[in-house]
Amino acid sequence: MTAQVDHMVVAAASLAEGVQWCERVLGVTPGPGGEHALMGTHNRLITVATPTFAQAYLEIIAIHSGAPCARPVGTKRWFDLDDPDMHLRLQQRGPQLVHFVARTARAQAGVRALARLGLDRGEVLQASRMTAQGLLDWQITVREDGQRLFFGALPTLIQWGEVHPADSMAPSGITLQSLQAHHPRPDALRACYEALGLTGIEVTPGPPNLVATLQTPRGLVTLESRGI
Image 1: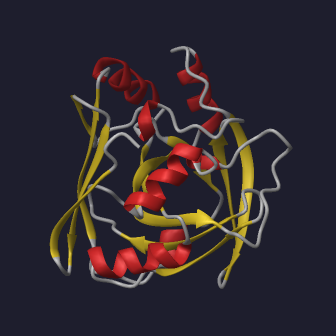
Image 2: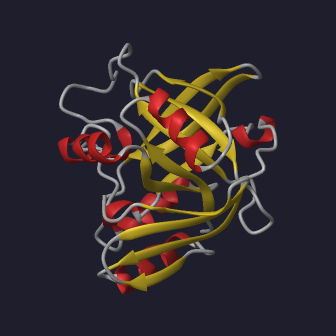
């Protein structure tokens, strides 16, 4: 079992706010994304890849007001986007880093590995969206309640089909320098990463916080979740 950082998730109250945040904070306009019919969300994307974080990118995501969630009644959107506390934080503080997604070739095995630690990472769902290059498809773990777990520090797992979205992204001038996870239960979080074969993320004790350091046209920029 191996996994690696695939992308970071920046949530926004609206996609327009997310684009404005990206231009103001990172100094670039995000590239195109698409719509997720299953979740009623849409996104914009930016490559942040380096040799250490190959094919990594940043996703700016928001609920699409004109597209209802197609999940069964009683289930929630991914990344806690239906959570009232998340809504309040995004309205009060604006777009912010909330989560990251780890890429693996064995999503089902990853779910079983976490289950052995007593964690329900969720069902492996089939998802897709249309792009200018054709249909992009993937498998992704989503709990019925949409929760991220460990305040966003336990990654959602994704298994891509034949095409990875970063393959068609234009250079952005932004690179991911490091990703850190702070949590009051660092040993438990490390055990999860080890079960997934996930490396490259420093885990330290402390209040819940994801910290991503990016080299950007505006210099070094640090994004933090601060327990959201």
